[in-house]
Amino acid sequence: MNTKKNSIAGYQHITHTFGPVFDADSEILILGSLPSVQSRAQQFYYGHPQNRFWKVLAAVYQNPVPVSIEEKKAFLQKNHVALWDVIASCDIVGSSDSSIKNVKENDINIILKSAAIKAIYLNGGKAYELFIKYCKGTLQNMDLLESAEPMTMASKNIPHSVQQPRIVKLPSTSPANAAWSLERLIHTWGEEILVAGTVQAGKWNCL
Image 1 (cartoon, rainbow, N blue to C red):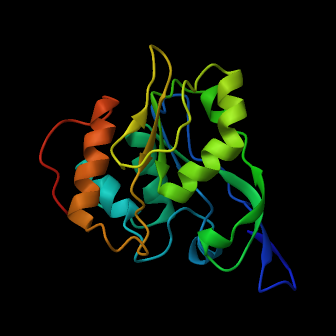
Image 2 (tube, rainbow, N blue to C red):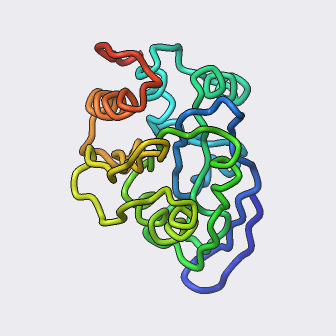
């Protein structure tokens, strides 16, 4: 992750230097906002030890929690999950999503033109906000987005029609989202991913 110091209030200019994970068999796309400081250091997604992303997905898909980067990539491929972030570059203070400005978005067409994505899941409110603000035009041009009104409940989603991916805001797996327990995250993520038909119905347990 390339960084350039900015003298204004501790801002750094961040460029996303590791690419998306996907292949032609990907069925859902999960988007975050921007990797945290620890994820930038590791050069892979959700590297903060307190971020519950990998525990949530492992429970939803009833797989062991992946540990190494190679295990995480294999897990995503096995379960047909594509993973990326909305932001290609921006100015930010540390890992503070609320400080993000001067955004350049990633080109999600790279994934949407390569795989039959059934649903796009935004990991948290900030990722959703950025997605609607910076990727809305791309989706409208592809006739994928029918509505872009902000959602007030985590389980609500934007309507979709045949062959169009659902656009769903999910509660953040970040440790900053302390109001959501791991069990509650697993249930909500599982119920939403179940709608896409990429996971089996069942009682999801913490691993």
